[in-house]
Amino acid sequence: MKIDWDRRTCARRGHITYLPHEEHLRDKLRAATALGEAWRCLRCGDFALGDPHGSGPAADAPLVPRGKVLRDLFVLRFLAVERAVRGVFIVLAAVGVWQFSNRKDAVRRFFDEYIAVLRPVARHFHYDLDHSPVVGTIQKTFGYRHSTLLLVAALLLAYALVEIIEGVGLWRAKRWAEYLTVVATAAFLPLEIYELTEKVSWLKIATLVINILAVLYIALTKRLFGLRGGRAAFDEERHSASLLEVETSAGVAATAHNG
Image (cartoon, rainbow, N blue to C red; front, side):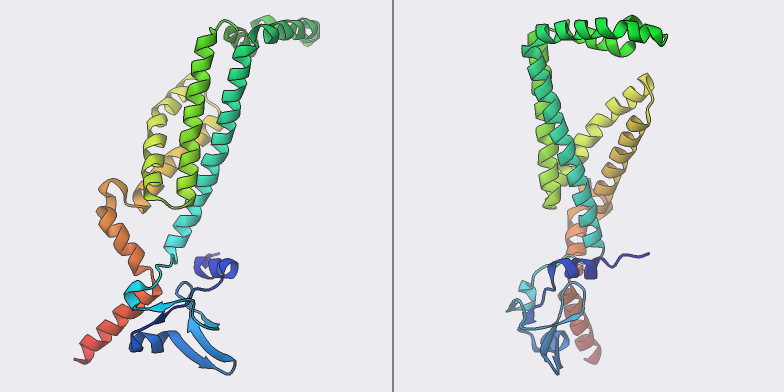
């Protein structure tokens, strides 16, 4: 089922109408009804009763996201939420590492006592805790120096900050955030591929696929790094998405044809 992004957005946020000073455009965007004057919405094209939300020259009309631009904005905001949620979890991980660095001896004693209690139970189910990869990894962390753990916590916080900044920028559809997301995500792709060579899991595969698709989608649809015409082509596409711009072009074409 095809989604009508224009009407979907107008249903949530309301219509956007505009009264242009140019008479030939004003007549195209206005309609007289039994209930009063109605103006054509710049986003969905439907007529809405009431006074226009703004007025002025056609060149000063608000640039209203429509169609494909709205769909792209929805995808960007989905990625923004994903980045922000990931950033929050990384912050929690950094706090956990920091807390662990300050209470390592207490945690080690608790862990050893916990393992001593569980060892007979595990042995009953023919599971050797002393040779468990998970247990071995945890025990290895107890050997890390306090300064090393603090460095890990600081790096995690820095990574989380980048993710949260990406999320905020993508939500607000900032172009610098799109560049940041592509560069930062692409920089971690080799590490994610290397991790897959060490151990394959569905979570790692899904994360890698999502990140690759995000890089390709943002770089291509937003025409970053000069792709598909670059910034000039992107701005032209945005301006052509305005209904008033379409009406202006139609008016100019009609005038030229009549001449």
